[in-house]
Structure formats: structure tokens, C-alpha cells
Image 1 (cartoon, rainbow, N blue to C red):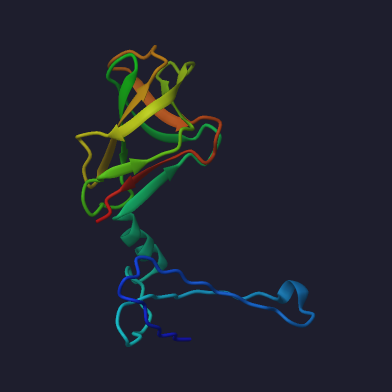
Image 2 (image 1 turned 120 degrees about the vertical axis):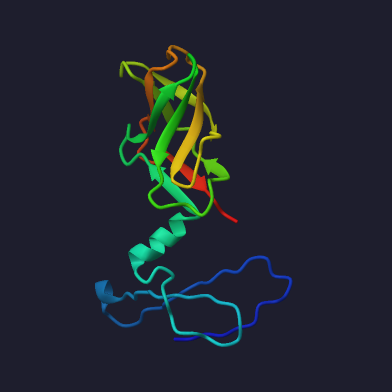
Length: 174
């Protein structure tokens, strides 16, 4: 299907909705699948193409602008590094693809902890910021904790704090 419409010149957002009203008695077989959606400027619809040629290529193209590391388990691993003080550390992780530029911002929930080399101690993460050593290929953050107890030069890592949805996201958006 091709749908062409006009968007007002003052519009700052655009949303799309797909809807179905099943009729009959198909029950579990009342469904539809949407794939290959393409939104573009202009009055002529072009043939659908994926930016990267494949779904994996499309993901890699997207990850050049934003990538997110998710804990995936209650205490899942998010990055490793070295303590710079009793309350701070610098963590590094390789980017899954070369990003467009070094990241300009990060986002994260407040459900992560810093754990240090002895493995027995974990402190709540109080802040996380981009480190000056961040590049297009190596993502670096400076992590702070109010708990103390770390020793400069010792290994550290960031993990979920009993949350499989903990994450660190890196943005190189325009």
C-alpha cells in the first residue's frame, strides 16, 4: 500500500497508526503483520529500501546514532573500568559499531550499582557522565557513588541493581 498525504509546514511532530477491526469467527487467526514502512519527504513514493540493505545493516546504521547496553539480568554487567578514587571510577565499553561522532549525551535509570574488584561490595550509582576519553569506538563514562570503599587503581564495573532493565544509552544524535 502507498499512502500520500500533506503535512502542514508548522508541524513539529508526526505520528502513524495502524488499526484493524476483525470481523468473523477466526479468533486466534485474526491478526496482521506490518513490515517495510517508509516515511519520506516529497510527493512521490519511492520503492522501499533498507538503509543498511538488511535488517542487521539497518540496526548498525541506527547504532551509529544511539546505542544502549541493557543489564539483561537482575545484576547484569554494563561496563568495566578502574576506580579513580574511593567514590569514583571510569568505565569503558566498546561500541557495537563505529558511532557517527563521539557520543554527546548518555541516559540511564537510577537502578545501577558500582561494584569493585573484591566482588563483595557494591555502592549505589549517584551520577554517570561522559568521560573525555570517549571516542566513536570506545564509550567511556565517569561514574560516582556516595558509598566510598573503592581504592584508586582497582578494577570496577557497573551492573544492574536487582533490575534486568538497567541500562546505559549513548547518543551521537545530530
